[in-house]
Image (spheres, rainbow, N blue to C red):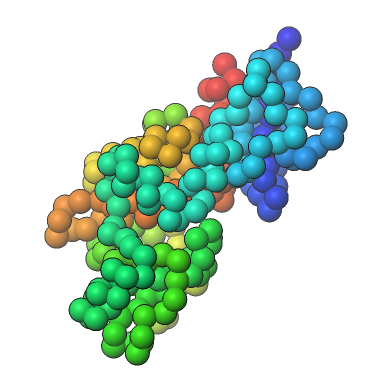
Length: 261
């Protein structure tokens, strides 16, 4: 019996999952399906290759006989910023910025240091991030996580699949962008991902692979910054269901096709 590729898409992740399935279908004789965690009709088979695309809970149709790439428990760990940092620090797996809860962060604030307040632990695309210091705020805002701001010469997104880097992009200022924020580099602040004319230090790749491995993921997109003065890379977060466009889509397609061999 031919293998089937099953992309188990989390709620809100169906557009990327379908885009991935549509890219794979013309290049394989295997059946390709996109299913939900709560599908009452789907039945896994021995030999299925199941790609868990962003689900942090186990599907109702799960069976011990068929495992998924990216276990839901590992995804649940990776989407919570505090749990991610605690795991990575505990494993001593990769380099991360210094972080704390409120007590230590108050000392940082009183010392005039820049602090990244994470107002939500599961935000995406920079949601819930606020950069503060005692010049911009009278008091330290309440937040579940505080990260000591680390200066960066560059910020990268490194895609890792089975311990291999399959794609990398760098955040650069969007052409025509005004009032660009160079500390918080997201789309809203004038930054876009680029792959042309980029120079990626080897430590960026090393830290990205180590982060994915430590979190127990089979694949993930790792946001990594490069501190030029220290000549060191720092992991900020890991995304288990990244947006897919252009070469990034092709890279995941090729990596998954290899799993079907």
